Length: 293
Image 1: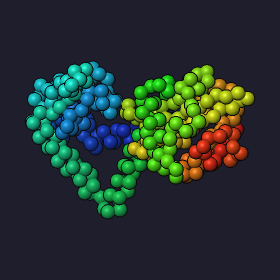
Image 2: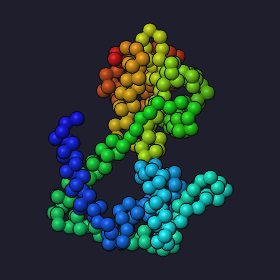
Image 3: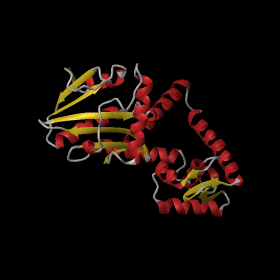
Image 4: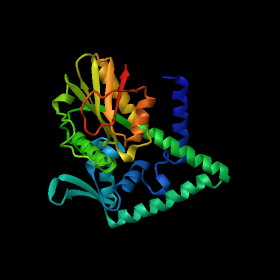
């Protein structure tokens, strides 16, 4: 890693934490830390499951519990069970907590305006654009990719979303029962692997690779959630799947795709894939690609 890049990231972190008031024990002069104020905001008007809060804020259970206890002691939030399922724990704002959240919104807007007010129109546009780019890149850096079983509930859900999207995009629709079969076993070692990408605990991309004979890996079911597109996840998943194939002795990867998926076709070509003759009888495929690793 470039030491200068690391130093610049640290300098940026120091500047931001100071400017947004993260160093102040009483964030926005409300008598509580930035962490507690952020948690109050994330619980929201309709409440939130503790599991979701942990994933969304990347907090361990103990720290989240301590912050919720502080909000409870202040009369701003409470934790209870979900009606109908006592196993699910939910944090909810009290009326005082909801009022406090609205006040935090007002003060946060004022703080943002104080950052923009000293700048001219051009500088404001540059700052807002730069912040948007930083936000996108931080999201990219927070994505994790891991090997999972195809039967994992998150993997099943992601593939389900993938099939639903194909049904809306393919000219003839899509019926999972008519595509070439793909068993769970074919996407588990030693026959293959399935990768799942998550952002703050939520599945945002999926993809599989079959490890075939003759040094060939076949990439299957690469999908990126619409909520995470534009972050380069499609290329990252493709690269990760290629790495799995390479690590298991495959020197060539191939895939097929439908002509309606123009973005995917452009990605494959830019990633070094070239079109070849059909290597399977997939009824929904119009293009077949291959790449040497």
